Amino acid sequence: MIQPFTQRPIQWVSDQGELLQDLPERYTPEFIRELYRHMLRAREMDRKLIPLLRQGRTSFYAQAHGMEATQVGLALACRSGHDWWWLYYRDHPIMLTLGVPMLQIVSQIMGTASDSCKGRQMPHHFCAKEYNVASISSSIASQIPPATGTAMAQKYLGTDEITVCTFGDGATSEGDWHAGVNMAAVSHAPVMFVCENNQWAISTGVADQTASETIHIKARAYGMPGYYVDGNDVIAVLEVMSHVADQIRSGEGPAMVEALTYRVGSHSNADADAEKNYRTREEVAEWTARDPLERIEKLLQNMGHPISEEEKAAMVGEVGDEVAAAIDEAAASGTPDWDLMFQDVYAVQPPHLAEQEAYVRAEQEALA
Image (cartoon, rainbow, N blue to C red):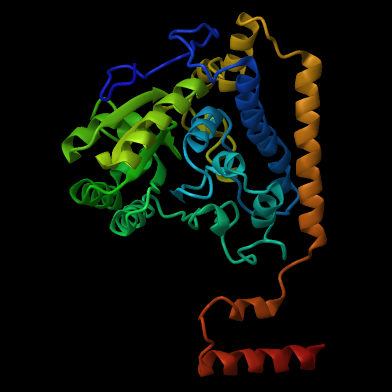
């Protein structure tokens, strides 16, 4: 039963892979395997791309290890290429699940010539115009007001699109968060606010972030429903997010979902020794034992359709080959040419910029 403002996170599958509610019809062993593949693909992408930092081939990476169920379930609950997305910087599993090509993601991380952002954006801060994914910003909660604006436009135009806006628990302490959420409620905008509560905003724990018992309970004060889901249970996430998306799409206004999950890895390459600096190894071990991929492995085992070691190894190898090919292709495209800095700035290049480009071009030719 999916109800707002529950005291405990909504679950479908326990940590031990036991069913806590009847599975809807679509959850055949084959479909559950597909959910697993999506999560494994994101996990292996992290594992393969983090070494790029040590090789000096990128300067920033924010892994999603432990949070894959939240992101895969959310992406599959919405309509790819139809709904609009304002994401935060740890959401590459959403991008992958929506269908954004691996090459496009890897090129952006490496800042190569094949990058659709042409190397201008900070690594791991994606956008994908054809999938309606707006450019990601590092400024915490800065995506909340424009997400509300996007949803207000959708309402004005009378489309059946919705806007999905993701953020971490730390964003809820920002003024932009309040302003955007409040305006969405007042304007009855079709936006889903999703808090990926991984319990750490860099080194600030959620207990130091808010005095409220949960994040989703804040929705009540804004006049919208708030849902609480186990963010490591991909089936629960998909069911809750689908329910909320359908409600919003039918004209019931905005809603908030809190997915309780955990960032097993570091915040980024800036805090590789997180366990030494601000959290305990025991805490990490406790949440590692609640791994979203292992939960699905146990569920399939209990259903009599286990994933064999050979099958899992084949999946891992497939993703590894996909990532390696994307890295090679991105690297082969070379670095962006200098004159790209003058493109995509104005629809029609103004005279002063044309003069600057001519000056730099003459300088480059003289140095050649």
